[in-house]
Length: 296
Image (cartoon, rainbow, N blue to C red):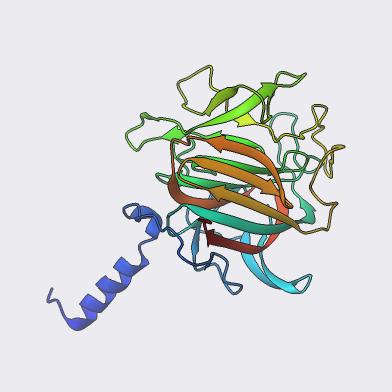
């Protein structure tokens, strides 16, 4: 077949349509000025990953609404579990997100477990690396290797390590981060600035790994119920907008909620990667998602 201009046009069109997630990892961007990941109009800075549909989103789990409390916003319906992932990788930034919960939660049966009446749940992962879905060995997971800012009612600001697998089926080391933490009355690790340092990790072949460190004010009597708020919770009541901040420096991670530092990690083993927002059977709106340069 001759390489006519029409043929070349379609070849270029197909090449341009290859999703960014299937190509080589992009070089990380260090913001020199604010970057609006959500441009207020569409999701062109992202791609979606839903295990049941891979890179398609037929049920519009991720969409943009024109007006929620006077602002355009990303709407995550929560109907299916999956991820909204940035096309590009980033490093050394101050992430700012503003979110509020929607009224809808979805049934999800796992044994006797149903999500519809449980604490609303989402999360922001940073420094995500590898292929979408690589949190599981079969690459059918809803999430990726990276470090999570937990967004679950009563648990906003927990550090969660998200391990994963390489393409060849071998365990992907880490990620790891050092956190000053003590064990609370339930034996769970909780951030405290004066505590001894521990290493949080999710290297999958390490049975002693500590995946999660609760934020400093997490209620040890937390209950997995919709609308939960502990006595010291900083999250606003349902319907209020909350401000999440992640200061991701070369040697530290600082998590903030509504202006208060809630968790700190140092010496992260991964320092750059894509940014991911989770859909976990809970409706959530995000009206701001931007990266600012780190302060000198």
